[in-house]
Amino acid sequence: MKRFLMLLAGLCMPTLLLAGTIHVSPTGDDRAEGTKNAPLRTPHAALKMAREWRRTADERTAGGIEIRFAAGRYTLDRTIYLRPEDSGTALSPTTLMADEGAEGKVFIVGSMPLKNWTKEGNCWVTDAPKQHGRPILTRQLWGFGGKLFRANEFGEGKMQRIIAFDTQNRTITIPKPTIKGLEKAEGLEMMVHQRWATAILRVKEMRYEGEKAVVSFLEPESHLEFEHPWPQPVIGEERGNSSYMLMNARELLNENYEWWQEGATGKIYLFAKDPAIDPNKTTVYIPHLERLMTIEGAPKKSVEYITFRGITFADTAWNRPSEAGHVTLQGGFPFIDGYKLYDKPGFAWDENLENQAWLLRPEAAVSVVNARHIAFDGCSFVALGSTGLDLATNVHHSAVTACTFRNIGGTALLAGSFGEGPTEVHIPYNAIGSKEGFCSYLTLADNRITNCTREDWGAVGIGCGYVHDVTITRNLVDGVNYSAIAVGWGWTKHKTGMQRNRITHNTVRNYARQLYDTGGIYTLSNQPNSLIENNIIYAPTEAPYATNHRAFCIYLDAATDGYTIRNNWCEVKDSFGFNNPGPKIRFEGENSPQMNRRALALPDVKY
Image (cartoon, rainbow, N blue to C red; front, side, top):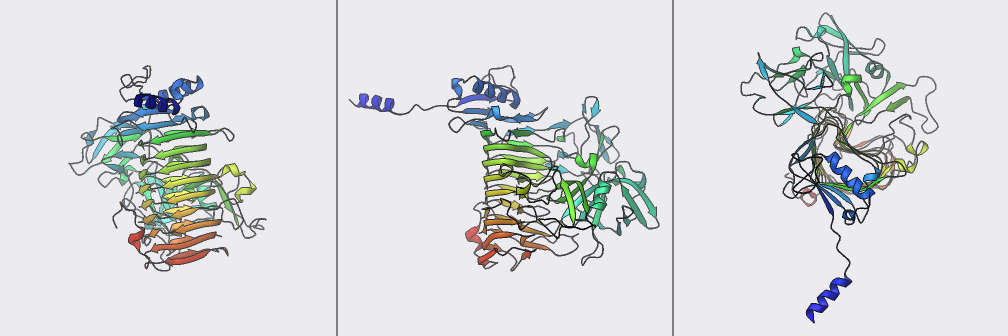
């Protein structure tokens, strides 16, 4: 009787549907069957197989599809592309994941190893790999446990004050360099500190006038740098003039681990006065891809129900400054064009607006557009040239949880439109796009963001533009050069659709390392029914080249409204910045060192 009842119960229960599994290994074969004993070799082949299973209604899709990666490096020869046909469903999702025992050991990379180094004086020298008969040219090298820095005048992160900024003649005057021959160096660049952003300018000419050097620049960055008013370098502010550094010349090689690449030949020179530095005994990687993966649906046909788990995305390039310079408005977004309005400034939505700007979106290692129910869980984003992960536009009901972002050139985690593209950036978003352009119902939780914004100091840890119903919670942001968490865009008091954004239980420290006009938590524009609560916010770092002291624990920048700020532990009492806030800002409870920091602390972070 007991056996009969068990059989009857089994017949009454729904059938347990198992996921179909596709196995991938760096030693596999893309002509194989994709089984454990006969794995495929590339993510491209695995996705194609999964796509075909769904197209043909293969019974293995009934419980979903798992693409399982064995441990190892998967060096891409082209960007991974996921489209609507790769979508899963709520009952049959697709999961790309590290195989059992391979967690933290699966690397999807866009780089190649550099080999055959020879010693020439104080430098190791090798040839860059060739593609299509041409050497790979790069601005990034990864090796010796981290990022290697291109040759620069003063050393990593160090600058000197400029003397003059001439908008009429489009020149910057600096002290005459002490290093001989720089005026003849090809490929020389200047990085300029300008308030809350930086500019990377390719040098056209440097002429000496006594103990000064007058520098002019190539187009298009010369036009952008001297025409746009916000931000520009400043002269004579309370802490001094804006600052600069010269970069990318062989003559500047003078510190261990600095490197330089000769543009004509592709030869790479690694300075190593210390005899213990030997690139033949370790591996130095040169990136050849800027984008590792694109997830892109159509506006009315999303990519849906895909999860990534336990995968590391690593080793990408960022080449735009070498091709067009890099002049940014804010948050790492470069100008297409921008200028000051002299004749009758002002618009219907802002009578005081006196400038125009058009922007591009920064490159990202992983980009998501027009998607729903996308999840990154326990993944890592490491050694990336620009943005790490970008949930760009029309991404909804998605999550980034328990991920690590480390050693990234730009913003670690970006979400939402920033008005980039052909439309002027200051126009309130609801006047130029539909609600589908927003990102919404995102969860960004339990992530660890460290040592980011290393190439573009004006990028941020977590940056959200036009978003609503986004929850940013229990994240650690530690080590950025501008703001740690920034939410909002548009500099407008008008309703745009941004609303119900929650920034809670985060820890931010070691921010504002280089730039100012910033906050540990930074907001812009009207965001009704939003919340900043129970965060731990350390004091801003004393940025050595800032020209004033505008850095705060919480900065409610232009026209911020709709936020309740409640019970945050702020290391500095009354460290709040305000720029024309709206009438619906509310401060409640304690927002000071009097809060119990230990009660708010993340459990695995040492304080």
